[in-house]
Length: 118
Image 1 (cartoon, rainbow, N blue to C red):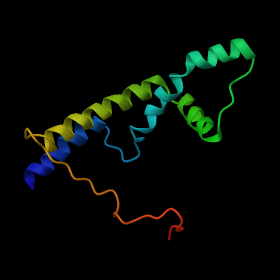
Image 2 (cartoon, rainbow, N blue to C red; image 1 turned 135 degrees about the horizontal axis):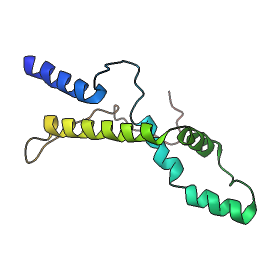
Image 3 (spheres, rainbow, N blue to C red; image 1 turned 60 degrees about the horizontal axis):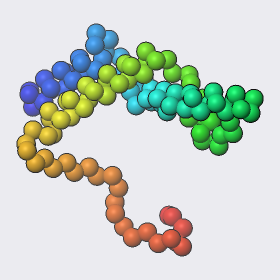
Image 4 (cartoon, rainbow, N blue to C red; image 1 turned 180 degrees about the vertical axis):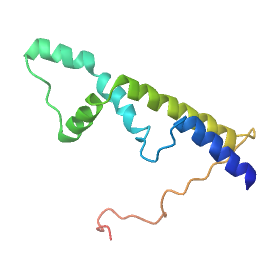
């Protein structure tokens, strides 16, 4: 138990640095920056050709609006946190040459197309 607690403290210290705050934004949220900026050239070319923004489906618009609002520094910090988690996860769970990771996602039951969900 003591070793596990020490590992958690090491991970938390690496993740949060000097400020251990519970309300730090989720690292994966700031990765939406990449989703938005991957289409910068497309948006520029579309504007040059049609003089208007491209049509977006409502979900894509929400994603792009969110990605647009994220600063590059926040995205870089999110990427740093993901790397810290990746290193910690590998050190904890993939120490052997053939690791096995079991992750319960949901109960597996038959799902019939024509039956409404309960």
